[in-house]
Length: 452
Image 1 (cartoon, rainbow, N blue to C red):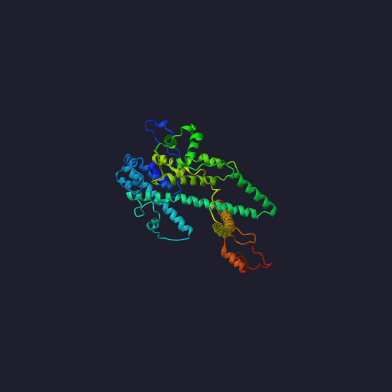
Image 2 (image 1 turned 120 degrees about the vertical axis):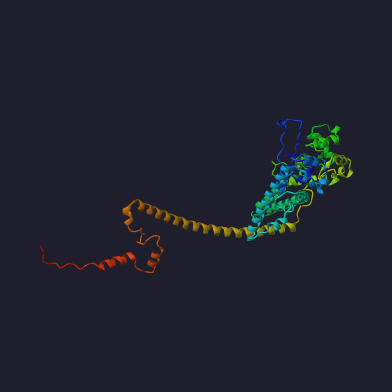
């Protein structure tokens, strides 16, 4: 799906998106297909993208989008154009919203089930209010308010996305340090000292890299111009540079196009083949570089760099005065010792909770196994009984035979008889035999005369 650059206000944190413009003069079969977009990280990412895709199929809305600026998108004026789109577009948007509401209901149910909250009369309308990207009071149709809420919520969430990524990186670094300390604790003194020396050597090896140019500086741009673009450094031209790296030709440099400019500098510090180089740290370094450039270049803070902003930045003294970039190795750790201790305490609590749940699950598993064995034994008995009954029905003589008995003569599948036997009572069959013997006639006399 090709996304208009103005929609990048909503999708700008999708760091690997490369939107390819469609040239209507070129036959469709010869056009280069665009790459798939990467998830923005929003929990409603799919819904957002599908709404954009449907809206861009409407010629009227697409025309309005092309003439709108980022301020029109932010303040909701663009959402009023929804009333003028085609009927098939509105129908598809209604369907998308119903699907999203259904998905959110499933999320709510799963959340309540995990919290052991039983509610027979769930008020979905009230619970859906916690989701800000759609109108919860109207769950069937997609209206102008839905588009306005979707844009405003996505804008707000994307603005906070970088902060969340920094926080995730901090937790990653704390986990790495925690695992390092735990690993060293399990070694004897000699091995621990040897391993500590090895780790320090790896750190020092990582620090030994070429000079890193400050991102966005003319020195950094010239290096890209010469080594990546293969052009004469003496003929460096900022305007030509901008057009070369505006890969989708939309007249602006979005965040992913900017980050592509830092690849050369990052390759000086990180190589996936080296044990001492952490690729997660490389991602954090790229993010820091992009934020640095945006802070100094993006004047109107629309998360896009226009040509005018770019050309002005090449003349800024404060941007070009920084000769070398301070890497993560040169700055303070992203966490304090106190934060690490709190993080480790959280890990211990989670491990204990997981341990308790593991014991409970193991007990449940044992119980289920015992129940399974009992059910299997009962199943076999029932199968045997059905087989014997089927044989009796086929053989008339077998119907007169007594019912099957167990190894001790007890009747099978007769609980009342089993209870009587447990109480020491005689079986009914035995009683019938005794009664039959008492009713027999006396033995006839031996010497009775014979009658003819």
